[in-house]
Image (cartoon, rainbow, N blue to C red):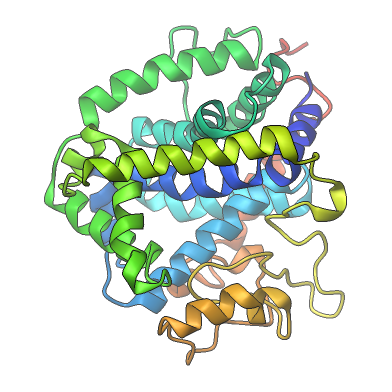
Length: 361
């Protein structure tokens, strides 16, 4: 399977077949990484997460979403995909050199981003993934991990896998050992997880916040709850969660047609603004960062519901859109271009029409 084929399969799964799974699991996957002290300490140290400044925190979330969206949903080898990888590498490089981000931490983050949606689908969606679809997910993320400079030296075969399925199986086995070893309680976990959950559900109607927060904790499970020092949710929250998702699964399987392309749920806009070359956010979370004015996404029903809950709307949220090279902390805007150019040139040798598992000739 070529990288291009894997990308096309995953894009279809994300936008048309299981958009809810991929959208919900992204937040929950990132939340899992906050149960690891070495990760939570670095995120708090940046001042962009774990901060009482909700605008700054939502900006960081918007930038992360934009970088992830362009890395995963833009065609491999395209300018915006290469720039997103290069920008991410630049933003991480200082922490890696200082020994604050370990390869194991990056590998686990890659794992949850790649496979939490798969676990959600197997458990809650109207059907499971086929072996070909699982192979596509493994193939795509294995290649992306290499572009991000993540080493697979701790996996048994390092580089000797036959396909994406074999790589995925070893990632599953490795992640279980990593979780047993590294998901442990800490003050930084508690602070980051608590404030992140407050942020995630800040636009939820107030009477339902405790219930939704409890359901998120239920989904994470006891080990992650303990590591983040989250209160054990009432048992009936698990019953409600499982019942609602089981009902959804039954209805989708028996009463709904497949989602047509017209009603797909894109994570990024297809083209930049022809006048500025900037991209707009296809969806927003908490604050309308990078959403074009006027647009349904900025002024639609969900936006009004969020604002009715008191979400602050006074600051400028950059309705002119973004350049991938400018994403990240404000202090990094305009920096790292030479570093990014070197990374992009190195990545251009990768051929999307080649299988990432094929031996180099």
